[in-house]
Length: 385
Image (cartoon, rainbow, N blue to C red):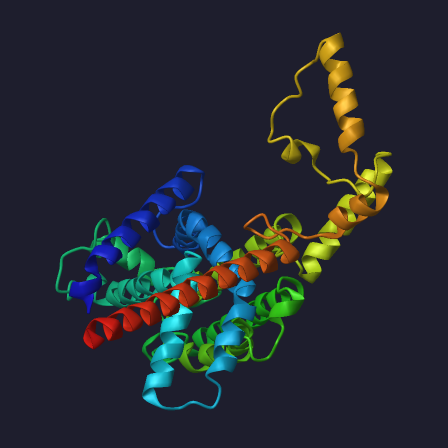
């Protein structure tokens, strides 16, 4: 396995060494110590920062999947009770066609997890190789900048008395097995608590009301993550080294901060967090003496461009045009209450487009049917002659 993961292990070793060099430059002691523990924290920060664009794509894919949920439920209802292979295949084909039509896939929201898994296991193998490398028994003389001397420093670095390379399963091989077990159990408990908090906040605050249907696949996945992942932590946490648990816990804390920023600045439309943000923006506008019904950020409506000054004649024309186009109070109320999705459409406009698309499909199908019928009649006339 080390042969397959060696390129990623090599990159991880260089990142950890770079963070360690930065910390020692800032005044931390070289060699074994807290600098190597913080280098794992730094590794987590670097990896997660590089994955921010992918996280944004995941967010867009998840929201688009929530918007497609009514269409997905229609397809599932259409094939409900049909267990034959042909019906199952057709259901799958229709769902994939729906995803392709909107430029997404059911696996788009899983990409960050899939990309992190090789990094996670590479760190596991790197810490596993620290002890044999420090004793000169590893199959390679070094892993990037981590040679025998550096490996000894990492092996001797501890988190509250527990070496970075130790785990609950290997605690008997170290001088302080009780410290290893206690630190590992505390780290696993913190991992479970942070993950549960993240998933619970996501389900209660950042999912639209339409997605809270128990039959929704996205809701089922979130519910599985809420109750299933803590169990996975319990059963797998005993095999992972203290350093891997530090990486995992740091990643969970990063997720909390990232999700909190998203809830405050870019929540899912129709969710509880979105309504709370709209209310905050409304209160800010009232405090500034502005109309609460208008958008909170006028610069967004203007596309970020400065309003150009108008001459006297053009100002009169613009004023007359605005009077003619000024909506009624009821229209303003309807427009302010409508919520536009990522495609820039309201629910009513989106439903109208679906209706027009299906109407066009039925019209084309009828035209093809009429053409086939006419062709059959022509063929019959030719045979009569």
